[in-house]
Amino acid sequence: MIMREAKPEERRRFYAEEWKKEDLPDFLLHTLSMREFGFDLDGTGPNYRYIQFLTIEDLANFLKSKAPHAAYSSVCLYQNPKQREGWIKAELVFDIDAKDLPVKSCGCPKGEVCEKCIMEAKQLAIEFSDVLKSDFGFRDIHFVYSGRGFHMRTTDEPAMLLGASERDQMVSYIVGGVIPSDLTISFGYSRIFRKRIAYMLEKVREDELKDAIKSRRVLSKILAEKSKIIEKIKAGQIEEILRPGEIGVGTIQKLLQFLAKMNFQLTDGKVTVDTKRILRLPSSLHSGVSRKCMVIKNIEKFHPDDAVPKFLMEVEH
Image (tube, rainbow, N blue to C red; front, side):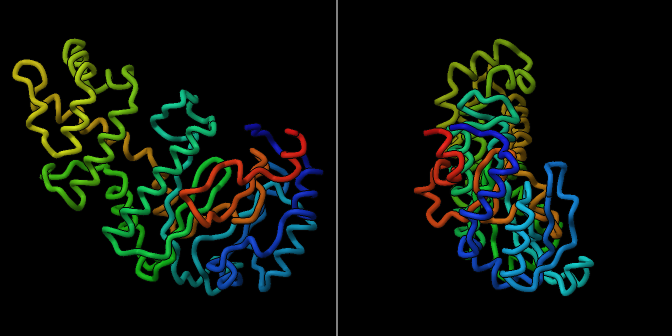
């Protein structure tokens, strides 16, 4: 899977031949004139900001004439997008970037991606979505492939009216970032926390665990029984992990605190909390990796190859 920067002529070809307005999601089309748009015209960053388009034709003409390195639109709606004034509401967004996952089974260095870690990011996006549906009752959840990960964009009215503090609490809940007072409850946050902790413990490397467990003897015991410990955590049977003189309450507490802290790295919390954020525009080209940023109609069936632009497919073949 080749990921490389798109050449200027490839960007121009993409917007001339492949980009089409039908690839823009309805939740953007219906609110187009109320959003701020921003562009990175040459790869130096999104410096061309505070842009408003009144019609889809205006946006289409801009993209085709400029062939930007990257295109963005705000997650929020404004009365006056050109001045970023008159804030109305904002999508509840979760950004799961494969290059920033705290643990990877693929062995990719942090900052790099491969097909395997992108698929792991996809699975996390699905699980986060399940929590938003089951625990909060949200239904209008849209998945967008960003080029190196996934944006989950929730447009339910109650979600869009949440403030920064409430969104921050949502991040803690979704990722399992705070140890609950009761770890044995079989539903709600306690269940979410145990699931995230088990996921993290399964994938965390031994050298990382050394930061939490200083005793080599205790660490060896935990590693030897890791599969059993994971199952006990999932079942809420924390007391059954304890081993007098080996794995005590203090050790378990340190382990949980360490893993909970790592959980916060599963998503970029700053993106969720920022109600004036700009995100990559679905339908645009992520020129840094030559991938289409696209709305995903069926997340279960999505594969990263679905986002390869034509100019790159021709090179690969």
